[in-house]
Structure formats: structure tokens, C-alpha cells
Length: 482
Length: 155
Image (cartoon, rainbow over all chains, first blue to last red; front, side):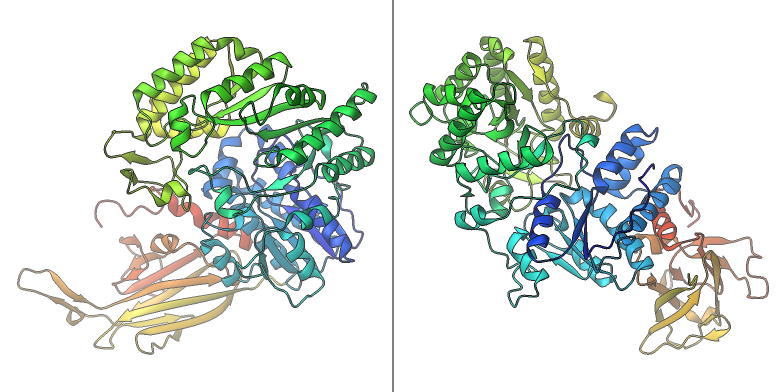
């Protein structure tokens, strides 16, 4: 693995992103935490181990083995030496800064394996350097089951773990405050709207944007969601929806653009338009800025919800267009209004069609995220979806579809809690492995629906996003029949 | 850098006649209430040989149908290397048992078995086939491979 030469300036804290997360854009966490550290008077350096690893793996002849190792910790002698060298090199790079604390960020459960091996090397080489881990990946599931964290503590591979929104708790930790909420316990506090507006802007000065497929500045506008979809684990984690003011978000965009020379932003929000008042302010500010600076426009990418016409009329779509979204990712989930209402995604067919008509009129790209195989879905719903795709194929100019890897029932979600009531028998992990004992829905049937809908969508001229991970899930379900 | 690695081993035993004995580096391991813990420093790579002896025919009780009702044995139930604990399933396949071998000639036998259950006299070999902790820990994931240390149909 080709890595830059060791830089040995001392920093109190080194923050590291643990692999393995395939992402086209940088993740916000380390930039957010660096600014918190600076506020607490800790010198800080960020090391994006994840992107170096991902780029290395993608070019490797054994990329599938590396991915399997990071996800499932399976052993392959062909990659053993590369892994040993990788962890050796990265740990040397981190420790070259002589930090008193190393913070490791785990974006998801897929980061657990790499984080463990990195901790092993850090501990071996510098047993007195403290290690703290955090991020949504430190727990086994959204319920907060923590056999992974306990295992690391038992092996003395970490000293602390941090839970939930870290801005306040990490600051308190660094200044040695009495308030230890979220540090080695699960009693973390969600940030209020006022808290969010008062946070320092993230510091991405150590980020190497050029290493990413789509260099863009990460940005967080809100936490939680205003919807209550029963399959979602975000709302189990964030019980409230909290949001920044539109002006505060816009100010950050200008600040970051000036600092890093990039005009593209990617929001990590569950939805950008949860609070309509602040969203309206934001898009008006962006529209005005882009109108005055046509050669230097800001652009942004975010998740978004379709709202009824009376909540989001045409004039707002026009303003939205001028704010220059590169793509709006909409959780359509199902083309059947009936299924959407059952899952808690309560927007009707009129709202769907109106949103798409407006996107078409104002040339706004929509990334439609869909789930195949909701527990009550049957063959007739699949046929209905195909009819819709045929009838509305003209939306293919602006609508790109992502069908996912078939319905997963994640532990702790509302759907998981009512599974007995709706005749669901879980046979996983993986969490796509469940059956409906009444309708007969099973993983193989749903995988076949997915293949059918994917092919049909393409035949109607839609671009269909096909991720490596989803393909891998379906292949596993169907074996050689995929 | 210090190349010694701290190994801890934990055993349980079912040994009603107190006949079965376990030796590590010629030192007898004492069981208290059927549990024994020991710690030694090892190099990497290394092969550690544990000696099991003293079991007789009287230590296996069978019923009239020749089913084993009680079998005197020692079991390796836990291990750490520099505090790093491998997966429990790894332990089931890791120890290599040379049945009826002796410490003078540890690997001389025509019966070899992989298990953490030591129900025979013989030598148990713990093969730490790695030059570093991380290499060793990576290799502990070999247990997921069904063909790794496969005992075959005999057992």
C-alpha cells in the first residue's frame, strides 16, 4: 500500500476513520470532531485511513477477499501480508505524531474488524497512548447491544468509547468535564436546534478531497427525521428531529467553499426539507447566490422528501432549481401508495407524481430509493410497480432508480418489534433473511422480484443504480441462479 | 522491541481419580476445584508442547452397552496472547493432539487429532505459527474454513 512518508509533527490527538466504507464523498465525522478538539485546545490531525484502504482494495486483484475480510473477518493467506503491512504502516503514521489520544471513527458495523486490528497495532507499539472509539459502527445493532465494544475493552484494546452525537460529549471528554454522558455509557444527549447552530464549522483542512471519486464537502443540516418509517433505524437512534437554521447552513457553505475551493456539498441528513421554514430560507439564499455568481455556483446533494403540493408549491420548486441541487435522493420506497402508507411513508400518489412533474419541468435530478419486498408486498404490487414504470417512463429523463438489496428487517426498528403481528419469522442475520408465513414471501422470491423490476426499469429507459454490495447480497441469496 | 508474548491458558478438568496430569515445560499444572490457569512468556513463532499423562482404563466408565458414561479429561477452555482473545471456535480446532506420544518424542504417533478436549494421554501441540500478534490473530480466523484441521470421519 502506497502511503505518504511519515510526518512527525506532534499532535495531542489523531483522529482516524476505520475502513471499510465505500463512499464517493468524504464523510463528515472527523472534520466535525477536529473542530471540537480545536475548541478544547487540543492540537489535532486527521488520518483518513478508510479512503486509502478503499482505493487500495479497489485496485487489488483480491478485492473481493479484502471486502470479505473487512465485513466478515474471513482469513485469506493471499492478502495476509498486505493486511499486516497496511495496519503496520497506518499505525506508524499515527504514532509518528506522538499523540496522547487516538480517536477512531466507525461509520458502520463494517468498520469493526479494521478498527480492532488497528487498535492491536497501536497498543503493541505504544501501550501508553489512550484510544477512544466512536461512531454508529461501535454497536452490534441500533439497540445498542455492545458485545463488540465489551470485547475490545476486555482485551484492553481501547480505553473509552463514545456514543451518539459526539460534539458536546467529546468536548466534555477532552476538557475533563464532570459530565461524562455518552462516554463509556449509553446516556448520550441529543443536540437541540440551538446547540446545532452554535457548533463550530467542521475543519476539513486535513482531508484529501482528490482521493475521492466525487470531491465534495460533507455537511450536516439536521439529525433525525420527521417521518416514522417502520423499517428505519435512524429514528431509533435519533428520537427527535433537530435542525440548523437555513442561514447557518448557508454561512457554513460559503465558509467551506472559501477555505477549500470546492463548490459541491453533500448533506448526510435523512432529509434536507424536514423543517420547511428553514429549508425555504436556505434555498432562497442559495438561489440568490447562484444567480449573482453564475460561473461560481454552489451545488448540493441531499436526501429529500416529496410533500403535497400545498406544502411545496411550484414556486418553491422553481427556487429549488435555482439553488442548484445536483441530485435529490428521495425515499420513494414503493410505487404503491398503499404499501408506502403501511410502512409509515405517508405521501400519496398525487404528491409523488407532482414532485416528479416539477423535477422534470425544472430539470432537477431525482435519485429514487426503493425497497423490494416490504412484508405485506405481494405479486400484485410488483405488477402495479411495472405498470407505473411503463405509464410514467417519461420521468426517466430525471429519475434514476435504486432498488436496494431487498427488504432488510433491522433489529430494533418498529418493523422488527411488530414482526409477530405481521407474521414475520426472522431467519437472519443477514437481515434480508426472513419469511412471511402467511403470504409466503421469502428471500428467494424477493430477490427474483428485484431482478425483474431492475430489468423492467431498464427496459423503460430508467437508469438503475447497481451497487456492489446489493449485487453481492442478491448473489448470496440466489446462489448461482443470479 | 521485546519479542516475548504473554500467553495465558485456562483449563477445566473432569478427573475424579486425580490420575490425569498436565505438564507445561515440565511443570505440573495444579487444578483447584477442577480449574487451572497458567501464564508463560513465549516467543513468536513457537510450538508449545503440553504433556498429558496418567490416564488409565479405570478413568473411563461405560455402561453395559459400552456407552461412555464418564470420561476423565482436561479441556482447554480459554486462551489469550498479550491479552488478545481468539474466537472460541478457534480453540476447538487449534490444539493438535499426538495421541500416546511422550515429551521425549512429542510427534511420534500415528494418531493425530485436533481438539481442545484432551481425553487421551499424549502431547498437545499449540502451534503459534506467526511472527507477530497481528499475524497470529489473522490466522485464528482459519477456523471458519471447514477443511482447516479437519479430523475426518474417524472422529
